Image 1 (cartoon, one colour):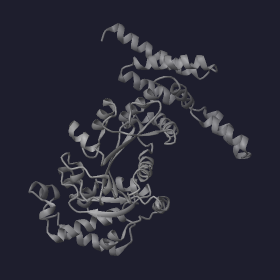
Image 2 (cartoon, rainbow, N blue to C red):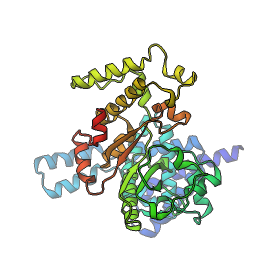
Image 3 (tube, rainbow, N blue to C red):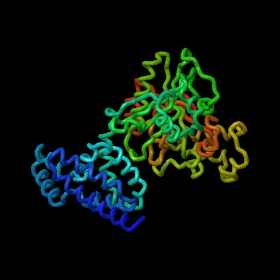
Image 4 (cartoon, rainbow, N blue to C red):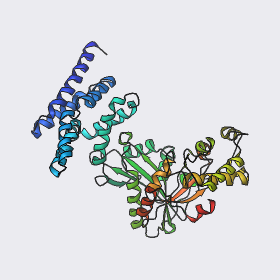
Length: 429
């Protein structure tokens, strides 16, 4: 890079910061739009270090005035009426939120702000001073990407190529092995739905893949086998949600998946009245790490009968004699596992999901579905025979059942610390 280019970038940083300060004093819509475009134009010229400097300016120079906040807070404390509450709310909001709103109004603003947070998340651990900026971005995104504003579209083989490419690129659960694999996942007995934002029409934010099958699936292999035969619609009895993937890291912490699953389930029920069951076929990441670490349920866990079972199961697996990685490297496979070891692993998994999911450190996938109102329905042995599946969950997979009439009740009970599980799981426990 030449000296002139470096000087130009430094000027762009200064101009972007000055324009950001000035835009908040503008009342005219035309001037505000012009200045927001100028901020974006200058921002795009910055290198990575200068962008970080811009973030620091937003995080430190656009905060509420402490003296005004204190004055208004005291007024509200002395007289907590509606007028004082409104005023307190106004003065405690960081001015950068209004700055970001104004940038969001111009063409390309939403996309650039989402990309800004995507970058910010990557550096946040080493730049803790930027957390107020990240907090405000997340706060705004919760409103801007409210599912009520999002459009759900089916993705099929006729969808634009750039959308299909993004589905291949962002599939995070079961890798899509090229176009032939994707074509099978979009056949008539499969469905793929995605959420789109009106300002990002070519960017799927999150998508879910569904298999329409005669019965509840217990293994992922047949569902993602690109050579498998298609099932006639007359046989559709169960919808299996086997993969859900976020496409935009910049929307971390913004809840989208729970709304997408519920909306898809309702849509499919209307399309195929023969569908009676809506379940996931989900991985259990972290299960074997929990087992290897001693299967702790927390210091204040008091169900002695459960603790006794955990101790018995750990003894039966006996990882002290041979570690889990050693077992795998020596060819461990669920088909050859002794019955005692199989029962112990399934038992530990049931305890892990039914007893530990509501606690800190519980399985994130379980927290997502159970917190979304699903029921812990069935634990499946040899559900995932991939290297990843063997390593993270000893091949186990789980079905979470979405009973559309009981979702709200199940959600409330999970929030209160209770996992709702089926008779199948009860028998294991």
